[in-house]
Image (cartoon, rainbow, N blue to C red; front, side, top):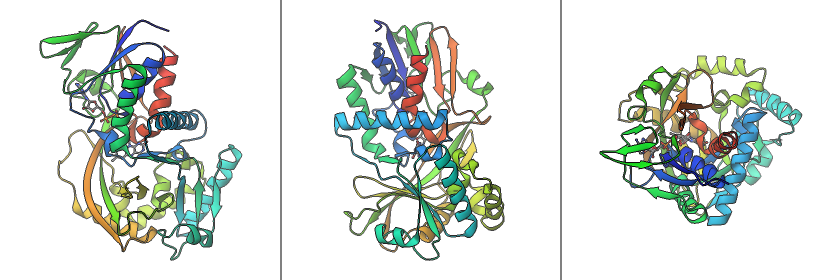
Length: 375
Ligand SMILES: Cc1cc2nc3c(=O)[nH]c(=O)nc-3n(C[C@H](O)[C@H](O)[C@H](O)COP(=O)(O)OP(=O)(O)OC[C@H]3O[C@@H](n4cnc5c(N)ncnc54)[C@H](O)[C@@H]3O)c2cc1C
């Protein structure tokens, strides 16, 4: 155990996971967040803890470790979660071929998944569209949290269990030595972690400029069901998601599917659209998303992209009773060189942890634990 102090900048999932890992090692941790609560990518997402998207090996193990930490925290502090697994659906023969190849690859790797017939899907999942459905790949490992509630609840848990101190509404403007400055005041710690998400501008802009990192803007939507006690039963994805996650590259005919999508669904591919649905504890359906890359984004959402998502959604789900209630976008940093994150030592006692892309809810807890364990 350590008597040392740590400051973590940013109360998104990366900051929280880092705070947890440091606190477990005995650090006296303070998290400093510029807003009154976390309002970044970490509360704008699907809440999908998503091992199925991670390639077999280190990243899959990290995802499963993160999942276990999520569960332990949730169980200890009454955070809602749903171990509903995920269903990837095939409406075309090439999608079905890929799902079969993935089933073989997952089986060989000791990962559990099952191929499911349309009949079995229809009998269990009333909101999955059975028209032209060839089958699905069900994976039991995926779990949903409601990020809008879970992220603040994790902060509360860390405060109560590990005495992590949270300082809200303080924007850190610079770091010098062991001091983090807010205006002309400062706080001191032995070790400082910068977990500032998509803000590359405030702290260490020169480092960020040199890194192979960019930002990604994603448009999202929320729907309510006529009967909000209905459950969709699992997280649902269409064929487009198969070209999105690294773990699916194991399917040897994926390139053929990608070619068809590029020919037939050009607008989807060029806007990085794939369609996924998760359901939260309020019964709301979280649907997305688009992927637009750059450093500065148009702040306005593009209605026609949401319409494209909705059109695709109606092919995989029975949505006639769904009512759209919200739209928004989120922005996350993403590495451009294929790395899964950036962990950078900028001085003896100062570290940047960022660039975890679209998998922060899935990987942060495990990643932060590995990093702190190895320090
Ligand atoms: C729409 C969308 C859907 C997604 N879906 C999923 C999903 O289902 N599953 C999954 O695993 N991942 C998902 N992701 C990815 C995941 O949300 C991100 O990887 C993760 O939230 C990044 O966390 P973060 O802590 O780095 O960033 P953030 O949540 O943005 O947190 C950074 C925090 O740092 C604070 N900050 C920045 N600078 C300062 C400063 N100078 N002083 C004080 N505070 C500062 C900010 O205010 C902010 O609160 C999704 C992302 C988006 C946008």
